[in-house]
Amino acid sequence: MPLKLAPPPPIVPETMLALLAVTTEFAAAKPWLDMADSDVVGLADPVTGETRLACILGNAREVFGVAIYRRQTGVRWLINALNGDADCSDLDNAALVDALKIELVPKREMHKEELSRLKALDFRPAGKGLVWPQFQSVQPGWLPWFIDQAEAEQLLADAPRLTSFATLFRLHPDLFDNHPPGEFPFLPNPMPDRPLQLEDLDWRPIIPQPGVFDSFKASAEQLNQLHALKRDARAAYEYGSRVVSGSSVLVDGRRSYSRVSLLVENRRGLVLGFDLSLASHPFEETVGAGLVKTLLASGALPKTLFIDDKKLEPILVPLCKQLNIELLLSKKLPGLADAQASLSGYMQSGPL
Image 1: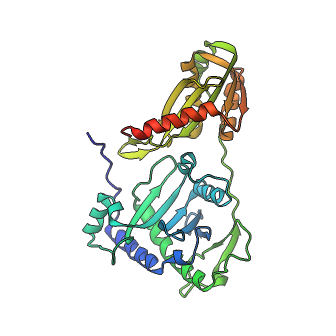
Image 2: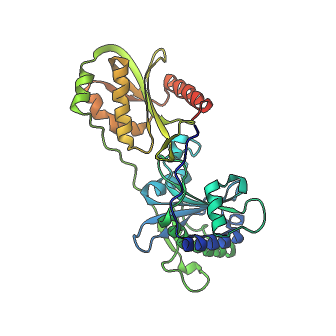
Image 3: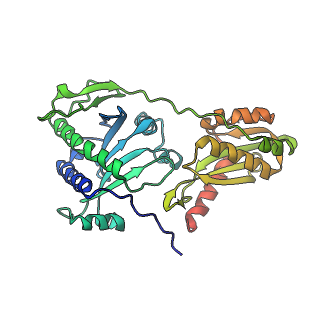
């Protein structure tokens, strides 16, 4: 029986028609002819003050549209990507994106629900090919989803502002030349009732807050179970928790990435424990609970536990101290890497 997706969130027809109109104007401006995805524009929410960063997609002639990164999570992700501190091809990193996207795609890439909504509004784009507007909400841990009413209103406010900036950029292609990396032009609130000018831009440096993870706190029951395990004074294990390709699952009609936690014997590379959880759940809980489950499955407490992801260190240090396990960060853990690659290959060949 095929898995059934939940229907798209409802959007007021007037809002959707207005959004389609401003998206058509944005597409007609073809900002990707002049702007690269590194030409990032700042948007400050007039009500909440929230900082959003937008980048135009299409300079590489592959994906055409705009991505608007929101909240601290999204802003941090984009700046890390711009600085080369994040591997955008890494699924574990891609699952952290927090953004809204407008893409122009061929009709075959539109979901039937999207086409049904456009048909009900009697909307059909002009031309052929990459002309169909697709609106996506991307949240950490979840695969791209349909936008809701609030997100449609945000795009409705942001799209025409970005079209105005693209027009200004076309006149001043050296606009970013005298500004250091990490400093972005913010558009005015409200926008002037005339063409945008250079003096309207408010250049601001953006230094995102680093991602901070709380330590995992095991329950009394979990600690009792762990302390009851035998201790192998010679054993060394490898532990990792990553989003694995092909591991998405349906949750309440919406696709979520899965996070796979693996415990591997260091010397022989044997898999000792396995845990599958939702990537949309808090990272600290997933990592900590995954270690508890895999240690219990292994039947013993090791002398040393190796990890290859520094994000895990602050989460697991307290638990490892309670269990008298030495926690060590290593750049390479071949056994763990092989187990993750094997599991990913298996999941991609399966029904998920």
